[in-house]
Length: 273
Image (cartoon, rainbow, N blue to C red):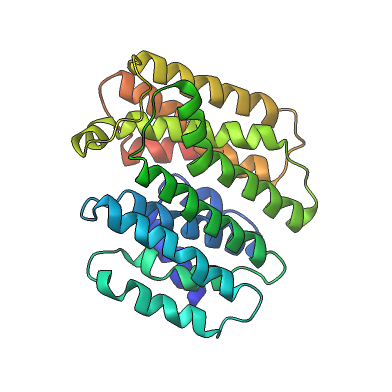
């Protein structure tokens, strides 16, 4: 199998929200966004792993940075990429494929945009290490804003840079941050029971579900207000599906369903055809 087919397979295995919109992008853009998404997901799988203690998570997240920094701009056969194998070796039976193959995903982005994807991946690992070491200590809405930027809003900025590189599209960067924050807030609501079960609470002190619903909707509405003013482009097609799925997921959670069925997802996707 080729690396491109592996990208597609692993992407489909790891995201039902983004697989379809990414698969609809033009070839070079599709490969770049898929690469970036899988790099971010690789890091996320370390942060959220149920069988790794916080110390191990922080060690892995901090350790990735120096290895990747040494590889930027020196070719895909650099020994540093091979070093990733030995770096992950003690955890090969624990970590998922998407994490173990982060070197492949990084190497699959076009050379002109590769440094930006690598830099974003390194920064993501360090930000997540910070939150792991501080045990996701969220007391206020300011703390929540910091967390949702770290793990999602900053990804929106990377997407802006990728589109600008691809076709010169200028995207409202604040809108991209709000897009990421809104989606992350929906994830927090959806995973609430699982997160609190492992001793992690992303809700600021005194917040109820009602507060988090309001926070999610505020950011999603701000994102939509910015996107609607943009000319119709591949970016708008890309964000349409995640926004619709996020709003439908909020309604499902409010109705006690927790998540959307596959049939509901496909029905929503069909609205964008």
